[in-house]
Image (cartoon, rainbow, N blue to C red; front, side, top):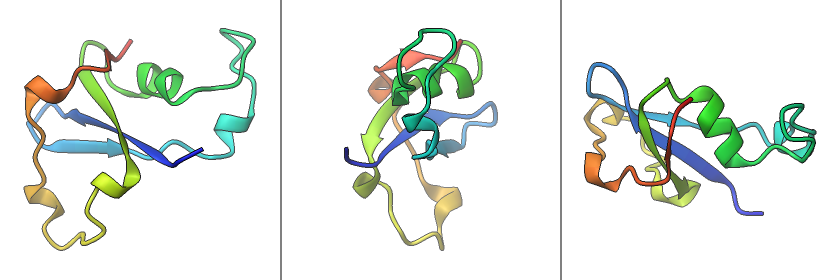
Length: 83
């Protein structure tokens, strides 16, 4: 499975990126009885009410020099909402 990232806008408007643990994705989610999915992680870890997008890790720049300048358009956050 390709590595994925979860992107959302934080309370201060900055772009936040979550990298789900590959180990977690091999474990059973006690709420569903199935393996954890990236969407499960997003719903759990993205703040309540915040929209998110799941993207390939290759869409995130490896150059962290200007990471405070990374942006995401609110209209692109269409995969779900943090619970």
